[in-house]
Image (tube, rainbow, N blue to C red; front, side, top):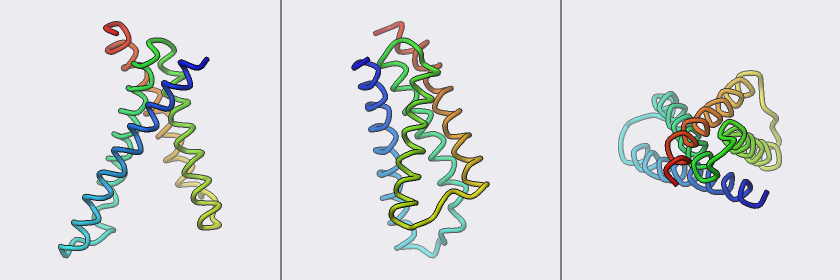
Length: 124
C-alpha cells in the first residue's frame, strides 16, 4: 500500500513540476512579448495533458503494477487539488466544460500509467 501511495506521489510531483516549469516560462513570454493569454490557451491545455500523461507514466512505472489504477489515481489527485484551489481560493466550482476536461485529464493519466507499467515496470 505504501509503495502504491509513493508511486502516486511521484506522479503528482512530476506533473506539478512540469506544470510549474512551463507556467514560469509562459509567464515570461506573456510579460516580455505581445502574446496574449488567450492565444496560449490551447498550448496550456496540451501541456497539461502531456504533464498528466507523464505523471501517470511515472506512477505506473514506479509501482510496476496496476498502471491504469495508479495513473487514474494520480489524475484524480490532481483534479482534487485543482478543485480545492479553485473552490477554497476563488470560491468557484467546476463548470461543465471543466468537468469534461478533468475527466479527460484522468483518462490521460490512466493511459500514461498503462504505458508506464509496460515500459518502465518490466525494466525496473
